[in-house]
Length: 215
Image (cartoon, rainbow, N blue to C red; front, side, top):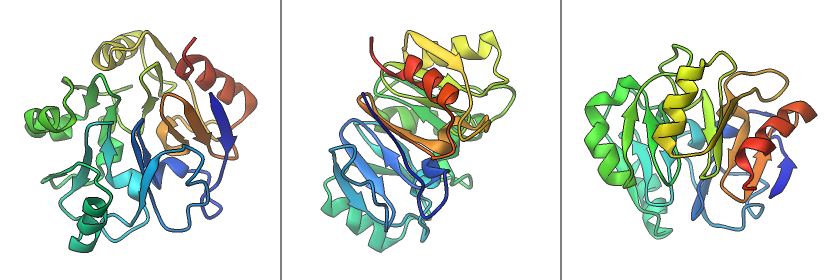
């Protein structure tokens, strides 16, 4: 598995700025590691901002975007042939609310009324829940098709729910960027590559490597 450190425009919270799957990636402007994942990609804003990862979530089948997406941004996605679905909700930070891989999705109760719609778009089962009592489950964990790392305050019951929802065999608690429990804020990954914020420590990287790399 390929591993590198990177800050976007000086910010180690790179997970807020891009969305990466096993088939495609969506990056903001001036993202300098576009070729790292060796994927077809599109460069765009979402909802008029560079916070692509905050406002989107997706897997290989579909990218979920908020209703605040602009017409110009939609045209960018269409031109890239990325399948996307607009989720109409007052909660627009979809990246913070959805933890997903190609086998399942663990989704915040804030989007419980969109459960069937999300299932249909992503083509995976959806489980509604929280992590460590926090409803913003997307920012509380990172996952690929091999495993997951979740908020350091998560319980064994939380871990079991996430593991079952995503159909992975490995899961552990962890942090990113020198102790942040909001793991996905500082990492972009799929099942073969991961990019972490430059403040991520060796022990943090080791924990992530153990969970996300296929043995």
